[in-house]
Image (cartoon, rainbow, N blue to C red; front, side, top):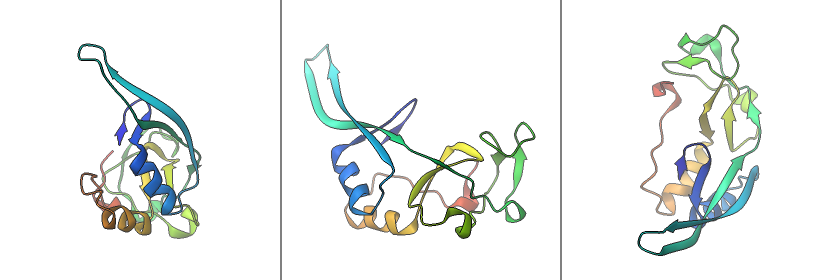
Length: 129
Protein backbone atom coordinates (compact mmCIF):
# COMPACT_ATOMS: atom_id res chain seq x y z
CA UNK A 1 0.00 0.00 0.00
CA UNK A 2 1.31 3.44 -0.87
CA UNK A 3 -0.17 6.32 1.12
CA UNK A 4 0.74 9.42 -0.86
CA UNK A 5 -1.83 11.84 -2.27
CA UNK A 6 -4.01 8.78 -2.76
CA UNK A 7 -3.98 5.36 -1.22
CA UNK A 8 -2.89 2.81 -3.83
CA UNK A 9 -2.84 -0.87 -2.94
CA UNK A 10 -2.79 -4.25 -4.59
CA UNK A 11 -6.04 -6.02 -5.35
CA UNK A 12 -4.80 -8.78 -3.00
CA UNK A 13 -4.56 -6.34 -0.07
CA UNK A 14 -7.98 -4.90 -0.87
CA UNK A 15 -9.51 -8.39 -0.81
CA UNK A 16 -7.82 -9.18 2.51
CA UNK A 17 -9.11 -5.95 4.07
CA UNK A 18 -12.61 -6.74 2.85
CA UNK A 19 -12.33 -10.32 4.20
CA UNK A 20 -11.39 -8.79 7.58
CA UNK A 21 -14.63 -6.78 7.51
CA UNK A 22 -13.38 -3.36 6.39
CA UNK A 23 -16.33 -1.89 4.53
CA UNK A 24 -15.63 1.83 4.25
CA UNK A 25 -13.40 1.80 1.18
CA UNK A 26 -14.36 3.60 -2.02
CA UNK A 27 -12.40 1.69 -4.68
CA UNK A 28 -11.30 2.68 -8.19
CA UNK A 29 -9.38 0.56 -10.70
CA UNK A 30 -5.82 1.76 -11.28
CA UNK A 31 -3.52 1.02 -14.18
CA UNK A 32 0.17 1.42 -13.51
CA UNK A 33 2.34 1.94 -16.56
CA UNK A 34 6.04 2.39 -17.22
CA UNK A 35 6.16 4.04 -20.60
CA UNK A 36 9.92 3.49 -20.81
CA UNK A 37 9.67 -0.30 -20.61
CA UNK A 38 6.10 -0.83 -21.73
CA UNK A 39 5.26 -2.55 -18.44
CA UNK A 40 1.59 -2.28 -17.50
CA UNK A 41 -0.44 -3.83 -14.70
CA UNK A 42 -4.01 -3.52 -13.51
CA UNK A 43 -3.31 -5.38 -10.26
CA UNK A 44 -3.76 -2.19 -8.19
CA UNK A 45 -6.63 -0.03 -7.00
CA UNK A 46 -6.87 3.54 -5.80
CA UNK A 47 -8.80 3.73 -2.54
CA UNK A 48 -10.59 6.46 -0.66
CA UNK A 49 -10.85 5.59 3.03
CA UNK A 50 -14.26 7.02 3.88
CA UNK A 51 -14.93 8.76 7.16
CA UNK A 52 -13.04 10.51 9.90
CA UNK A 53 -13.42 9.23 13.45
CA UNK A 54 -12.70 11.40 16.46
CA UNK A 55 -11.26 8.71 18.71
CA UNK A 56 -8.36 10.27 20.64
CA UNK A 57 -8.21 9.84 24.40
CA UNK A 58 -6.56 13.22 25.07
CA UNK A 59 -5.93 12.52 28.76
CA UNK A 60 -3.65 9.63 27.83
CA UNK A 61 -2.11 11.12 24.66
CA UNK A 62 0.93 13.33 24.30
CA UNK A 63 -0.09 16.36 22.21
CA UNK A 64 2.96 18.25 20.92
CA UNK A 65 1.50 20.66 18.37
CA UNK A 66 -1.23 21.69 15.99
CA UNK A 67 -3.23 24.80 15.27
CA UNK A 68 -4.98 24.87 18.66
CA UNK A 69 -8.12 23.06 17.51
CA UNK A 70 -7.92 19.30 18.08
CA UNK A 71 -8.98 18.51 14.52
CA UNK A 72 -7.18 17.49 11.32
CA UNK A 73 -3.58 18.46 12.19
CA UNK A 74 -2.97 17.76 15.88
CA UNK A 75 0.58 16.50 16.40
CA UNK A 76 1.21 13.66 18.81
CA UNK A 77 4.24 11.99 20.31
CA UNK A 78 2.19 8.95 21.24
CA UNK A 79 -1.57 8.84 20.93
CA UNK A 80 -4.14 6.86 22.87
CA UNK A 81 -7.25 5.62 21.07
CA UNK A 82 -10.49 5.51 23.06
CA UNK A 83 -12.22 2.22 22.07
CA UNK A 84 -15.65 3.64 22.86
CA UNK A 85 -15.06 6.55 20.49
CA UNK A 86 -13.65 4.23 17.82
CA UNK A 87 -16.85 2.19 18.12
CA UNK A 88 -16.99 -0.72 15.68
CA UNK A 89 -14.84 0.92 13.01
CA UNK A 90 -12.19 -1.49 11.73
CA UNK A 91 -10.14 1.00 9.68
CA UNK A 92 -10.39 4.78 9.67
CA UNK A 93 -8.57 8.08 9.46
CA UNK A 94 -8.16 9.78 12.79
CA UNK A 95 -10.16 13.04 12.76
CA UNK A 96 -7.62 14.73 15.03
CA UNK A 97 -4.79 14.01 12.58
CA UNK A 98 -5.86 12.80 9.17
CA UNK A 99 -2.44 11.41 8.28
CA UNK A 100 -3.08 8.63 10.79
CA UNK A 101 -4.83 5.51 9.55
CA UNK A 102 -6.03 3.41 12.46
CA UNK A 103 -6.86 -0.27 12.09
CA UNK A 104 -8.42 -2.65 14.57
CA UNK A 105 -6.15 -5.36 15.95
CA UNK A 106 -8.35 -8.01 14.31
CA UNK A 107 -7.59 -6.51 10.88
CA UNK A 108 -3.85 -6.43 11.66
CA UNK A 109 -3.96 -10.06 12.75
CA UNK A 110 -5.87 -11.08 9.61
CA UNK A 111 -3.34 -9.33 7.37
CA UNK A 112 -0.36 -10.88 9.15
CA UNK A 113 -1.99 -14.33 9.05
CA UNK A 114 -2.42 -13.92 5.29
CA UNK A 115 1.21 -13.09 4.60
CA UNK A 116 1.22 -9.30 4.53
CA UNK A 117 4.59 -9.11 6.30
CA UNK A 118 5.71 -6.12 4.21
CA UNK A 119 3.30 -3.74 5.97
CA UNK A 120 4.47 -1.68 8.91
CA UNK A 121 2.17 -1.33 11.89
CA UNK A 122 2.87 1.26 14.58
CA UNK A 123 1.38 0.97 18.03
CA UNK A 124 -0.53 4.19 18.80
CA UNK A 125 1.63 4.84 21.86
CA UNK A 126 4.67 4.96 19.55
CA UNK A 127 3.05 6.99 16.80
CA UNK A 128 4.61 10.38 16.06
CA UNK A 129 2.92 12.77 13.73
